[in-house]
Image (tube, rainbow, N blue to C red; front, side, top):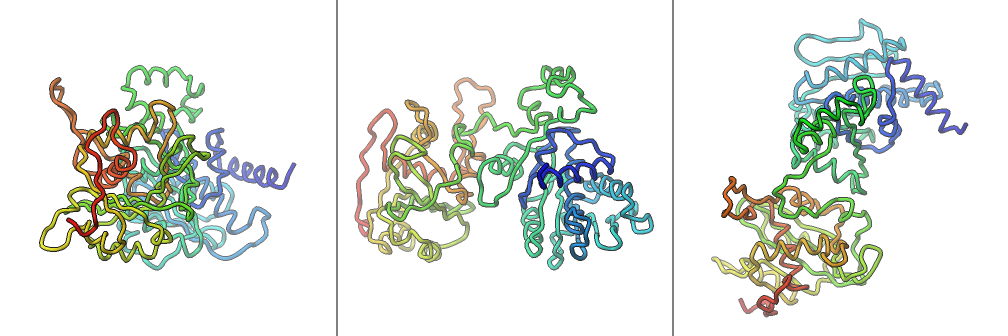
Length: 461
């Protein structure tokens, strides 16, 4: 038996002593060593148990390093939820595990009917507190060794970011668990993106309802699971029992998926020229710049294809400010061409966006009116080439604006009217439009020629 096997056997003995039975689906989660972990759980799948066990193991590692030799001082852990109620089940599981091992005294446990719960364990070396989202927003100094965000889909994205920041000083872990609430919210996006290589070095797991063998002894083939599958609509069953985010049926670009299009190795290549594909945005939308390189045959595709290596995706900033940001990027001196929304060529009371960019870089600035359906058709052909079935566009994982929009850009509902077309909405598509302008500028329209693009002088608008 290797040292690693011996340590895991010791951990299993500890968990069994806590009164928990470990199922195969939970083992991989408990063995993960990523700083950020997300567990999407089906209804009654045991996600609270696995989150509590993960925290308990971290406590023991902090204090004893599994050699049961004193390692270091006090550890602080937060159990965070939208309100105090959301974390009480996890608190109870952690408390029960510590009580069973004689590591906490009843006098050191505080569980008032209202307000936060708290316990101190291992002779004062461990503190555990329940916190609400409001508490987290107010706390700026404390640095926990680990945080559980329970029913994470019910907390706002800024709470996740606050918790992430609070783990930094001690290099603590952040464990998110919960049931899916929506297929397009930030939690579902993280579930999808963290199943592929990602900048956060996070990892996401799916824990379906049938992982709970106490309730469903035959797992996926349990008769009750099969019955629910027959009774419920497919998307409802997949979310509630399978813990899988089912994309909306009215997505504009349904071919996109993180595993294919965000492979984890898309980086700026200084040997290749750069193009800026720009949608300047309007009031309430985003100024989106997708930084593209046209690439020949490589490991990603046998056809000429596109790498989106970087992105600017901001609100409320001027073109001048954004240009200064771009100047700091490694690709600034390698820009050969700009493609911009035709609206960016229009004059208001000052120079147009196209004029500003052209004057700054003195490179060709291209623009052409692109109908939404023409752009979508070209875009879909790059997400999955109709002929080769290959993807022809790939992203660096830091291009968060574009990656989010793939799950948010929807068509309008038709209300069942046969003659009413489901048109693309005008929201959540700033990066998508920039990409479509760039694709058509370089590769033309699908199936028909369209009006040829004219390369204009940067100063001729």
